[in-house]
Amino acid sequence: MSAFRSGLLVLTSPLAALTPRLAPILTSAARLVEQTLYVHLQPGLSLAGPAQPHSSHVQATVEIINLITGLYAGADTYRHLDIRILLTNIRTKNPTPPPSLGSVQNLAHPPEVVLTDFQTLDGGQYNPVKQQLERYATSCYSCCPQLVSVLLYPEYDPGDTSTDSSVVPCASSLWSASPMPPSPKHPLQGYNHVVVGGTFDHLHNAHKLLLTVACLLAQKRLLVGVADKDLLENKVLRELLQPYTDRVKHLSEFLVDMKPSLVFDIVPLLDPYGPAGTDPSLECLVVSEETYRGGLAVNCRRLENGMEELALHQILLLKNSDHSESEEDKVSSSSFRQRLLGTLLRPLSKRPDLPSNVYVVGLTGPSGSGKSSVALLLQELGAKVIDSDQLGHRAYAPDGPAYQTVIEAFGTVLIFGILDILHEDGTINRKILSSRVFGNKKELKKLTDIVWPVIAKISQEEINKAPAEGKTICVIDAALLLEAGWNNMVHEVWTVIVPEKEALRRIMERDGLSEAAAKSRLQNQMSNQQYVDQSHVVLSTLWEPHITRRQVEKAWTLLQERIKSQ
Image (cartoon, rainbow, N blue to C red):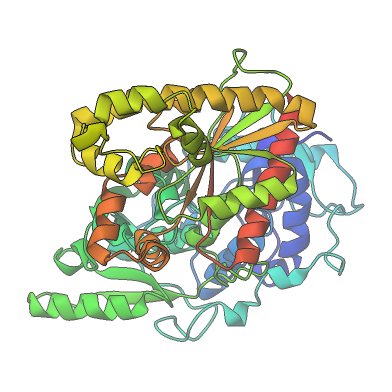
């Protein structure tokens, strides 16, 4: 059976029986659904009888929350899937009667296939049961007109040990004792106004668990604070963070899919307390193990402001079982951003104007980024590296194409006819030349208008030689690649970055500069973000050299695949 873009998984088994089956059920579903998998919990639903099955309310308990946590924990094995657990029929303990379930809920990605763990007596794809499943799905949610139904049993085997069930945590390990009630069957208390906060970058399963619990507890309104500006400064690879507007867009779609009956207020989070410290209508704050102390600080702030404390509802972190040595051992956005390193971040444009027999990569990055070490690794892997600094020396040499024009434009005659920008041997003194143009935009432009076209021409000559040298990939190593417009000469732009603090440390150590001088150098270059925004591939030398090597090898392998697929 071919894969479907979106699917709806209807889980009908009793809750106690579902936990050991989650891993094989998810494995079977992941074989059929490529992108979005909605999960609908309806324990005890029968699809075997003649009567039309209907959705009914399910009481929210610790057992339900543990199952939801298990689903998101297990789902992290299938990172291609966007799993969303639907909450319309799950209710908390609340004096207000729950809304009726008669209306059909629209979903952002209407399911093309409906799946279920329901078991027929003979274990076959029994048509009347499948018809009932389709009727049930379309009575609850907006589905594609040509909806396909699949009975997963016996495709998954509850007793099958070939699937790694360790990806689904046991129920007893999922929740801390406080503030959860002791009995798994005890109904959960709902709150009219609930608040939760986070960065919500590249929305992942740990975010989804946090948001799902918050939505489950909320009866009227969920206030979501999304970290922005100063709160992002110390994030690992913050240049690869999604823009605030993109994060809010993805967050909003996910929340509305989960529980459309709620009012969602999504606001920028600009300080650690956010609206949780000032909004008197809020009743509950959902936190993780990691942010629990922050929740206590919020309550201290509320007491200082004369408001009641919030009920703190704590969830455990989801573990990242296959994390690399540079990644966190929890499911996190920073680990996701590290996995983006070396991958293609934006689509490539067709370049029929460039040579077809050689592929050109432009390698750039600010001072101290480790660009040169990446260039050496690419050279080891088989690329022809064209060093723009070396080409600059050739251009400035006495027999170079830029020599005469530069000394005529910038040389000042001293006594005995000696030009002040020349060494005694007649070569251009680039330190004096640099001091003459530094801080003077007009003079700098005059120099770059002379030198940059010359370096571009020499670079093109080196590219043209590559096929005869047995090279099919050229890398132009140039700090000023983007400023000079040399990105028009390449198929892809690759950028190397490190945090500014690390770049400063390297520059001071390497060049013997003061911190002020090193800062001045960086401030006269583009920012990391400006480089990244104009790049197809991003690398970072922040970690140990062998980690950088793995990044570059990964990028090289993916590059080879792109070239072959053209």
